[in-house]
Image 1 (cartoon, one colour):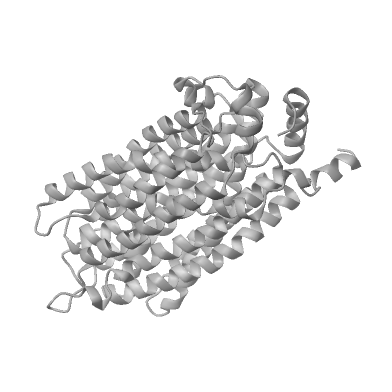
Image 2: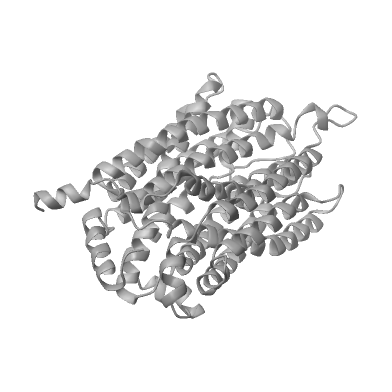
Length: 480
């Protein structure tokens, strides 16, 4: 590579490629709906339905798995619809507005259950409510994710967009960590002085749902669709629904980055519930009120470490490229999960802050850089097909990734049962159960992370390659 190429590789984004901060913030606000609409229910489900209402954990994780499979299909539909929609407000923003408002209204209804139902009655309520709510979230999420891949044509500005998004995301992440403690506040104690976790969850989700409605309106007003206005509305033809999956999967760089995401997601999702149970029953020896307080503190630590991870890994990506940045993320994440064996310690409970913090540090880097690669993949695909298909790629990666996560989440409850955990024991669990919770919490994610590392080292879209692709595209269809 000659000197001029090296200079181009590390050049700052051109002024025309940079986005106003208000647009980056507007897009980043969508992370509030993304986090709460997709993951808040999952974070509270075991506490509300298993610990408080006594539903078998296997039934809860089965519903979660079915939910993600339905999510994958509805994502494909709304990704395709937004690719082909033409309105005066763009092809993404109308879906973002409608889906976001309905998602906020629907969130508290997910916990609108009675007391004293049978396990199967709770199961069917959870399942039916999922079938209704999942397409609503897809209506918001697929157009929003697609919008992120088309806001700028610049290799590094795409990382900046995702960095702002992930920085904003720390606030809704903190709200998720606080959720468990909120449900045990004294306001919700029953006549016997015990926490009414169900009522606490109902109040909390009503508050967050109202915020989601307001945020969806703000996103609609603050964001713009650069590629739609300058390219798609004038030249692009209809995209068949079948292309959402099959033609998209024929894109080799996309298959590589998708494999990385799949391995990362499955490995971490399979132990999604174990960290909470390790805190409650190992570190805090069954004291759920104390455990939720530590959970909130861990959320604060995660937010702080996550904030630090965003500029750190963004700097690595700017200096050495996104592929190197992602490889660095995965190596450090492997070390973080191995460290959980020592960082969950009843003698030194404060070490949990580092357990959560190290995972959040690497997680922030992973999702920032992973999301930034999707725009590069779409550019590569446009160079091969002549079409901008952000919705198809967003939907396809969601389709495949969420099916993979469904396997991990679906296994999580059964993994918990495998450990010998017994919800009927309000205090300490057996030493065997504690051992398996700890060893699986550390060991399972490492396998997925190693596979993800192998995949990203094969990713071909380096910065130099993307500069070449952009030059060819602009020579063919002009600048956007």
